[in-house]
Length: 251
Image 1 (cartoon, rainbow, N blue to C red):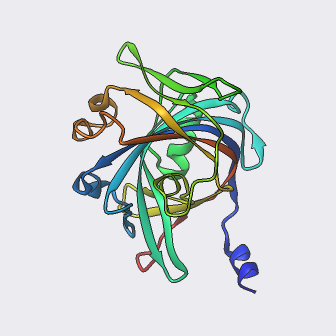
Image 2 (image 1 turned 45 degrees about the vertical axis):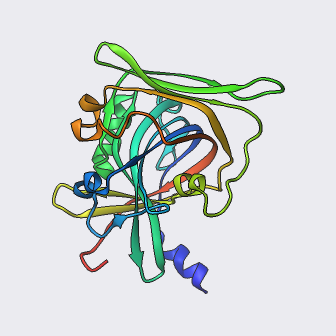
Image 3 (image 1 turned 30 degrees about the vertical axis):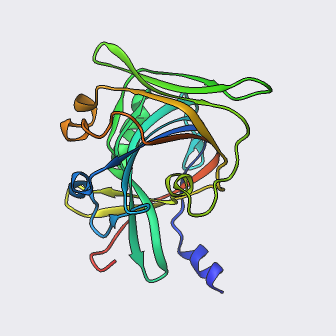
């Protein structure tokens, strides 16, 4: 059966965790800025003819690596900058993300991600504020990181009830990617799968972003990472990250 065959060929589990209260601030960007960062075997993914980068802050909870709880590293914040790609396969397209920079407050998290996947992690002090909407009360989700002798940060103010985004919407395009790709030093590509159920979304009534973009991400991103074109918060869920596999040149 196809399902059994796929299950047998799946890589083992690398990490399990909860990713919760994901604030997603999205920015349109010129494709030529992202092309140098494309891993081999992937191409840019577009929504309605536009390419995007997203700054995503979230809570990383109940972390286990290879089934083992990580002491003192089970609950922390993360903020990442990512863009969207697709890889064509005989089984159909795989829509994924590429991380340009990931910020975490725990040095071991950064070292592990760089060692296993060559992900672009850096370590900075971080803090968070998460207040979800209640009866007659708005909510706010905020993540901050200490850099350049000041707090940088992002925030999204939300209200009402979260809902699964409509098929074909921008929210679905941003939130529902189940593959990740990393460029390796020798030019190769690592692919890994991320499993989770569809997330519910709160649209952001207001979003703010204050960051030393040139120092953290590079001067080429400064013209684009100013005011987000859209923003929302996803409720998140338990996630499963599978071990990465190196793509062959023919993949």
